[in-house]
Amino acid sequence: MKYSAIKKDLYIDNRKNFIKHLKPNSVALFVSNDILPTNGDGSFGFVQNSDLLHLSGIDQEDTILMIFPDVKDGKHKEVLFIKETSDLIAVWEGAKLTKEQAKEASGIENIYWHHEFDKLFKGFVFQAEHIYLNSNEHTRRYIDMETAEMRFNKKIKEQFPLHTIQRSAPIMHRIRAIKHPLEVEAIQHACNITEKGFRRLLSFIKPGVMEYEIEAELIHEFVRNRSRGFAYGPIVASGANACVLHYVENNRACKDGDVILLDVAAEYANYASDMTRAIPVNGKYTPRQKEVYNSILRVMKAATDMLVVGNTFEKYNKAVGDLMTEELLQLGLIKSDEVKNQNPAWPAYKKYFMHGTSHFLGLDVHDVGFFAEPMQAGMVFTCEPGIYIPEEGLGIRLENNILITPTGNDDLMKNIPLEADEIEALMNK
Image (cartoon, rainbow, N blue to C red; front, side, top):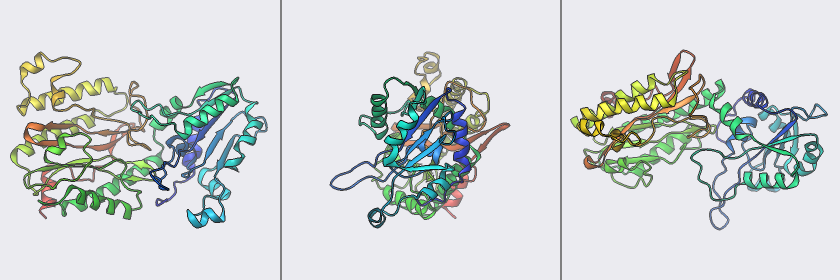
């Protein structure tokens, strides 16, 4: 891994928090992700299961975490099973964690090899009444393949059919939504790396540059600052491409007079940042481009002010929709009659602003949490209004990452240039 290890205090605290939600006499299991194949003997880079990482800090394959607070011997309340290294693995892949290194990373005393799990687990499982199994219950999940977690859960259910199976996911969604101070530090670090990448672009972009060249400048800056790279597929969308919400081809030449929508951000230590900016290819917005830009900026600032303890997403989304409606009326994009006769299920503003304004952010860029519950201190959200006008070949979205605090909020991207005049000044410096 490129990043500096996070203190084990984070994972110790996270496990304590998780245990508070378990039923008495329960054992909980978490398993690492697969290394996914490409073709031939190739594979994608490994990405750890976010929940396992949240509770253990172990960032390698073939890992199992067992949590059993009421275990009879009183010693094996937390057990970690990791991949046994060898001279062959050390030569071809690089040595895996030793037991001592895994102990230091996780704060877990009892470390065994991965191949010992089946035998050792049978010595504990019959003491338990409930088995908590984890699963991906993200509301936007679309997975057709059978994952390592699915295979593992199937095996446990088949081997121990008389135990009561419980779901860990609702607990993980709840505890991961409230960020530990060390997690906030990691997200802030990712935001700071993103800032470095963005500032690099302001002196690089000019008419004729290719979208993929912009992507290359960013990955250079991210990796040299110990990031694995992009927190998600980078969107470098110039001109009309910006009206395609998930445009990822990044293969067009940037033309004089166009605006580039950049939805690009770094990860750090598996924690995501998520930034969007819209900058003029030639360093100067046209009057119309700046008019649209400032409309979105006003919505963004007002929406950010509403990301506070106790607010609900129902109220928040309604208020943001009202703000956007007023801005679109002022821009001449919708008419008052359209608003008056709009379908409440698809308001008039949705023609030009069709996506949500905020989502949870953390170990995943679309992190887990409960949108139906009030906002709480420690949650981190994006704030990302946008206006997309295909008939003008113009799409502008602005996005920062907001930490909710007990007394308000903190913009973790407050140091990244945002005002149109500041961006113009820096591009023409």
